[in-house]
Image (tube, one colour):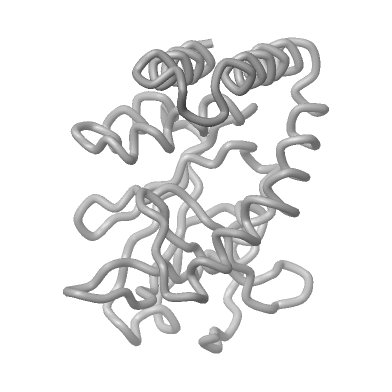
Length: 211
C-alpha cells in the first residue's frame, strides 16, 4: 500500500508540474488505474500477481535493460546480476536494484524464492555483479547468501537512504513485489570465487567458468 500510494503521488505530481506534457491526463489516469488494479490483485491472489509481473519483466523490461547494457549504457539505479542456471549451468543475467554498500551488495528480491535468480543462488551461490569501478564498469565476483529471517523493508530503507534513484527502484519493488526476500552478496577480489564456500542453503560446490 505504501508503494502504491507513493507511485500514484509521483504520477499525479509530475502531471501537476506540467499538465500539457505527454501523456497528459489520460496517461496519469491510466497509471492510477493500473496501480490500483495491481493493489487489488496483490490482496486477492499473490500467485496471480507474480505470474503477471514476471511475464512483463521477462518479456519486456529485462530484455530492454539487457539491451541497454550491451550498448554500453548503464541504467541509473540498476545493476546486472549474473547467476548460473540451476538446470542448464549457463550464465543467467538479471537486472536488479543497485544495493552496493561497501564490499556488500544487497538485493531485495520481489518474488522471494519464486524468482529464478534466487533459486539459482540456492543451487550455486557464486555470482557476478556488473558495477562501476573507477571510471568504467566491470564484472565483480561475489558469494551470495539468502537471508529469509532478515526484515526486507528495514533493509530496503537502509539501502535507499539518501539515494533518490534507489528510492525510485524501491518504490517499484514494493509495488510489483509479492514476497520480499533479502539477498546479500559479499563482493570478492578477482580469483577468490572458485576457492571460497558460501553459507546459502542448498548451495553445492561446482566449478565456475567465467562468461
